[in-house]
Length: 338
Ligand SMILES: [Zn+2]
Image (cartoon, rainbow, N blue to C red; front, side, top):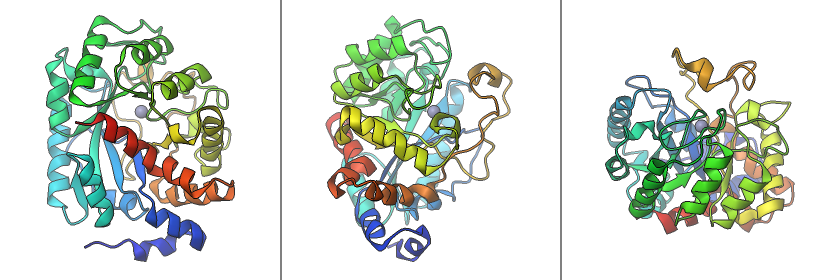
């Protein structure tokens, strides 16, 4: 059985925080790996040795051709299977408990943007069976399903509504990060299941189109969903990708919607990966006005233990910290996954 006790000395946090971080279930709701071809995932052990028990790996986004999603899932599933001494491919909630018991990391997938469906509602069930447990509408720009956050939001389309119906039926979490305001509101209203913003910070603290205003934060919580804070520099604040800003966003959300509806999706990437993939349409998906320095900094998984320390320092109860670190996401997935 693998062990993380050797690595806990490197967390550089107090004894109390380390004990809590080791004992709590830690759920990182999104890692933004942009698949461009067969990928070496040995860096996943950086997440596992940072105490993370569940990680949702991105397998595609609207920027790339949908067929690449299939290749990516095949590649990632094969990697997880070949490294079953440390990783578990998630089928059910029980797989996550098993990962925790055995100091392994459970891995599921997420999709950013419904171009990956190739216009076919049948693909929702197909992707679910391959391990996709969360999908968002449009990646920054409008698509067939709805509007993006950096676009003139067209609203939820008929296709988008049909896809929500399928997601509700198969048990895939409906996610509105990267989605336009109008589409997100309509999706929350239409969905029979709770809706989340997997990785979006508070617009009131950092005025960026990828961050969400109070009305969306409240609407997601009212649906029974959650808002996950994210460690991308431009969404965090003037100091960039620092845990201090992440904690500020957590504080803000907790004061507004309570600690039960807040989670973490760091959006870290692999060290051996360029955050800006070599694609010709990049300038449209990441407009210069919103990303003046490009996509630069991300809070790395190694900083995750400092979030636990920071929450303790800010006086959060152990119960609430456990919720934010993972139990809130676990409770939601327990309700929605089939
Ligand atoms: Zn994203």
